[in-house]
Image (cartoon, rainbow, N blue to C red; front, side, top):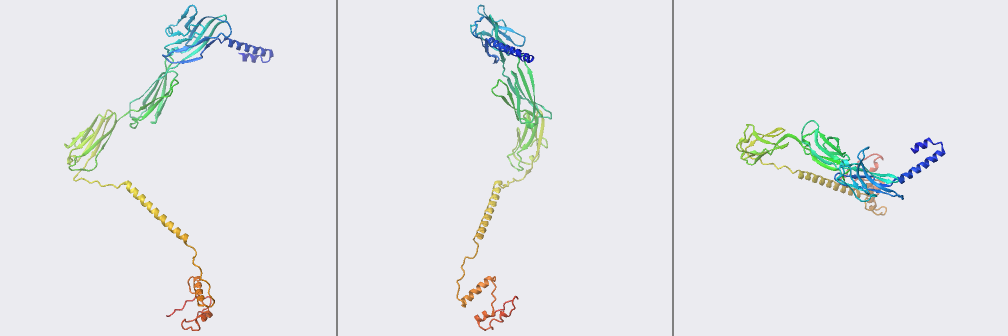
Length: 452
């Protein structure tokens, strides 16, 4: 209101000054008027007790207190006196709903605090501590009482039959809580959920959640968890449920080892069935209808006292529960003599042998590689020293020259000129044939054969 007035009087400096003065006066009156001290808000639970505190503050002025009243406002527009305190006439509780549940905590008009026992959800509302004073008139303070209620949580699995339609398989309820709770589901079965809300007459709220899926036999025994979160709980409430999906039996026959020889006495067959609920009956028959005399049946077990041609037949096991029946057949063959089992190679030993062989081959290859590398590293130029020089014209020098020339020519004998030959062997050419000097230069030749 002050802002609207200021907007209207924006062009008048005197009007603005008057507005500021009015605001200050109103604020001062508000401070002075606050003479009753109360708590702004309280929370409580049903069946418990709550203390509504009230105290009159003098504030430096002399005020005469004549009476104090507690007024309850459950809803807007409804005001009911529930407790009155008069210094001369005493205490009064005019409201029958609070008459036996409200008491004054002090025998002092300045501190007229009250206690409400055995609280109800319907006690929620505003409670005003109102003084009748002289000369200022009535003074009051209001406390809002919020009633809280812990929800009553529950969860259960719903037994269903396996089928092709989505049905409710689990329920979770948070009943009569205030404020309303929230429900979540933890599940790995791939369903979904829906939630409904119901308001109670006393302000409480009931939340109901249903978990749905298309149930199969494989879903039986799987787990889903309901989580309830609400203000009054320290932590979320959790309940784990195992789904209950009913289905007709599935049957298998086990125990036959293809070694039913004549005279055997420990041949056994087992009729294994999966069903929910558990099978009600298990029946063994043969192709001819009746069982041989050597056969004994105990529940799902068929025992052969002595194998003979009578059990060379087809056995049938039939299992029933309330949702239907299922059967399985097995043909047995009786042989003349016992078959000795052939030992199968140990898989672990075979794998170990293969790995050991591969490792050994790898080691051998590595050793060969290292040896060859060592040989290459040790090869190089010859380490022997050349022969010392000799005097010119000596026979030793001639021999060394021939060896060096032969090495330079790749091992072929050197070609000598005529003068060198004559100086070394003289003029006797009968022992060596034609002289190599007669061969033209640049032509290849073949050494003449030497005759010994």
